[in-house]
Length: 140
Image 1 (cartoon, helix red, strand yellow):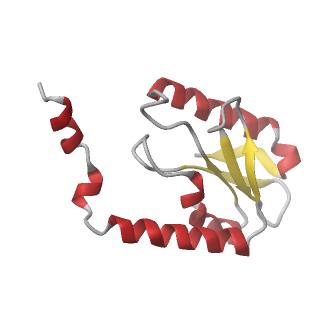
Image 2 (cartoon, rainbow, N blue to C red):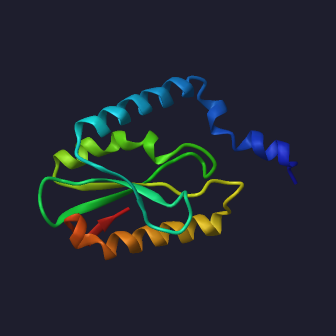
């Protein structure tokens, strides 16, 4: 059995990508540009905790399909605001985008993260008409 330290080393994907700080910086820069360039609504609350927010980038048509993007970070880092760069290509193709935040480990356990994502999906489905999305075409 591996020690906690050995497990941390084994699962440290950042160690395998030495230039990850430059990649993250580029993502943040492109995300800020997306927020500036696109119409969006920031920080919709979909659940009771401060972490349960999403940013919404509407397509330019009614009843658009929706891409729900759950950000990376290995359950313990990063933020939805680092991933807004995914929105422009989808919005240009007529697809709305929701970039979802969630509580991070170790404060939030994996089971609660799953519950948060279920709440996000439920919230988006319930508010589909208000958001101008097709509730039958929500994709994760």
